[in-house]
Length: 484
Image (tube, rainbow, N blue to C red; front, side, top):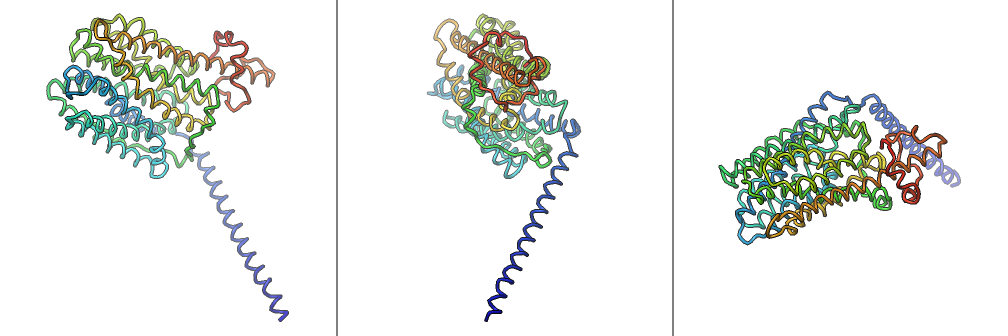
C-alpha cells in the first residue's frame, strides 16, 4: 500500500518533466523562428527601386482613377447647377454628394486597414475596384437626387476609401533614399488624373450626355484599377508591419492638436477650391467647356507641384515648407481669385494655386512623423483621416450657402477659402515654434548648441512639455531661421 502511494508522485513528476521539456522545446522553436524572422528583415532591406517602380506606377494610376475621377465632380456640379438636372434638388444637396464621397472614404479607413491585415492588400484593393465601378455605373442610371447620394456619394466613397488605404502605404516599403521622390510621383497621379478627367468629363457630357459619361468613366476606372490591383505587391510580411489601434492619448498632445488644426483648415479651403472653381468660371460668363478646362488646369498644377513640394520639403524642412506653401495658397485665393474675371486670368490662377493647394496631402505623413514619431505614426494618421471627415463633408455646402444672389456670387466663398488656408498656416507656424523649442530643450539637455541638433533626427518621445514653447521665446522661435 505504501509502495503504491509512493509511486504515484513519481509518475506525476515524470509527466511534469515531459511537459516542461516539451514547453521548453516549443519556446526554443519559437525563439529560433523569431531570430530567423529578424535575420530575414536585416538581410532584406528595401530594394530602393526594382519592382518598387511598378508599384509607383500602379499607385500613380490608382490615384488618377480615384482622387482624379473624384476631382471631376466639379464639372458634374457645374452641369447640375446650370441645368437643374434633378428637379427639386437644392445646391446644398448637390454639394453634399461631392463632400460625402471624400468624407466616407476617410471614415472607413479603420475598416480598410482591418481588411488589409486580415485578408491582404489585394483583397482590399479589389473591394475598392468593385465599389467604385458600381458607383459610376449606378450614377449613370440615377434619376433622383437620393439615387445620386447612394451612387456617386456613398458607393464611390467606399471604393475610394478601400483603394486609397490599400495602396497608400506600399510605395514607402520599396524605397530608402528615393522614398520622397517616389512618393511624390505616386501622389501626382491624383492631379494628372484630375486633369484628364475634368477635360474628358466635360467633353463627354456635351457630346454623349451625362449617362454615358458616367458609364465610360466606370469602364475605364475598372480596367485600370483592376490591373493595378493585380500588379501591386506589398512587403508587409518582410517588414513585419503592425497596425496600431486608435490612440486617444494623442489628443492630449498640444503639438498633435496643431497638426489636426492644419488638416481641418486646409481641407475647408481645399475642397471649396477644388469643387467651386469650375462653377465659378461659368458664374462670371465663361462657358461650361471653359469651366472644365479651368478645373483641369487646377489638377495639372497639383500634378506638377506635388513632387516639387516633396523635394523642397527634404531640403528646406518639412514643417517650414508646409506652413509657407499653405499660407501662399491662401494669399493666392485672396489676391488673385477674387479679381479673376477672364479666362486667361483664371487659367493662370488655376495653374499657380494648383501647385500649392494640395500641400497637406504631400506633407501630412512626414510632418506627422516629426510630431509623434514613427512608432505612433499609423495611429496618428488614422485619427487624422477620421477627423477630416467633418471638413470634407461640409466645406462645399458652406461655400454654396455663402453664395450671393447678385454681383460676384462667390465672393464670400473666396474670402472663406483664403482665410481657411491662412488659419491652417498659422497652426503650422505655431507647430514650427514648438519644434524649435523641442530642439532647444534637447540641446540644453545634451549640453551642446541647438544648431548641432538635427530636426530630422529628433525623436518626439523626448520629455518636453509642448505648452512651454508658448510661455517664453515664442516670437523668437517664430522668426528663427531654422530648418525644421
